[in-house]
Image 1 (cartoon, one colour):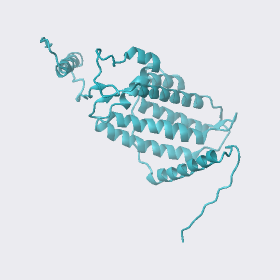
Image 2 (cartoon, one colour):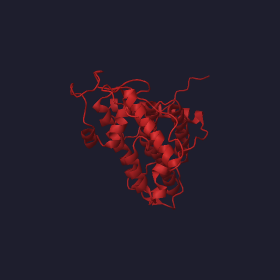
Image 3 (cartoon, helix red, strand yellow):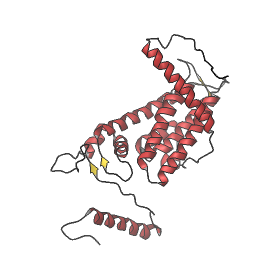
Image 4 (cartoon, one colour):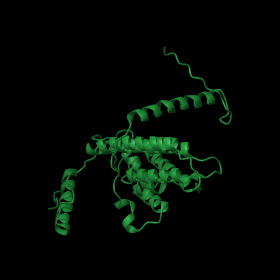
Length: 278
């Protein structure tokens, strides 16, 4: 069935295409292709107006892709689409998506560029343990968002995990000194964690993540990221994560004082702990 009346509504068009996919799935595989259908709101501009050709407020998708990349546009669209609401599209979100893609690529280049010394026996055990726990905490949150079809919230949880926890903290903690090698245990853990992050990012940024996945190691078609297994949730230590959050707040405060007092980051300063507990 195809709507033949002059006025075709969005629900009718949706029903038509969903019905076609269901029939095609039954015909060629003998199985239903999907169980649930996710409906988004109307895409509007940042002023709240419905996008239309007459208003001239509808951007050209190909121009956006050429400017920010396909993955950047995908991330930008999802960042502006909270569950159940209309999409208040703003091109700045696509720019944020492109910056995120650059951040991920630079993280890969950093890890890939490290020289590994098999003889070093000083792995960054605390940093590795912390991020493993933080990853599982974030994965638990992401899984819960997916079950409730909160795709934008799941993206933001992934964004914070990768940008803040992995790039800004974990890589900085394990990064070897200038022109110094890294130990094999830490390098292996960093690579595995990067791969785990790519799995979480793949639904949102399939092109970038697959490209990095193939650069990390030589892989066959059967080992492509798109057919890899999704990470499994493991138990995590909430107290360990809380302790690190406290330590990171202290470090951030010290950095702020350095900046406000114009103290060089190369200059060593003495710290004292005032304990008022009796």
